[in-house]
Image (cartoon, rainbow, N blue to C red; front, side, top):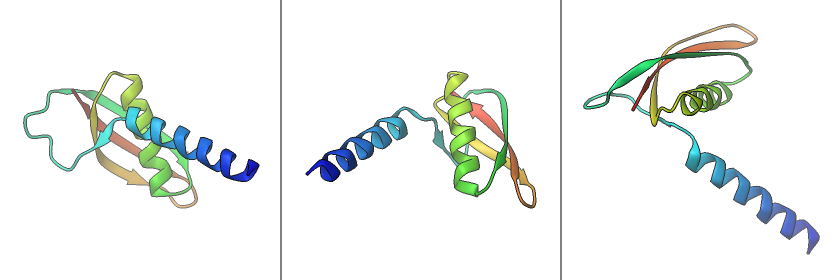
Length: 83
C-alpha cells in the first residue's frame, strides 16, 4: 500500500512539472521570438530537452525550438524561445 501511494505521488509531481514546462516546437509560425537559451552537461537528448525547457520557462517563454546540439559524453544545446 505504501509503495502504491509513493508511486502515485511521484507520478503526480511529474505530470505537474510537465504541465508547467515550455513546449518544444518544430516551427515558430505565429510565435514571438524572445531570445535564446543554452544548456549543457546532459547525458541524453531527453535530459537536454528538459533542461532547455526549464530554462525557457524561467525566462517566461511558452515554447522553444532547439537550434543545435553537440557533444560526445555530455551534450550541449541551444534553443530559441518564444511567447
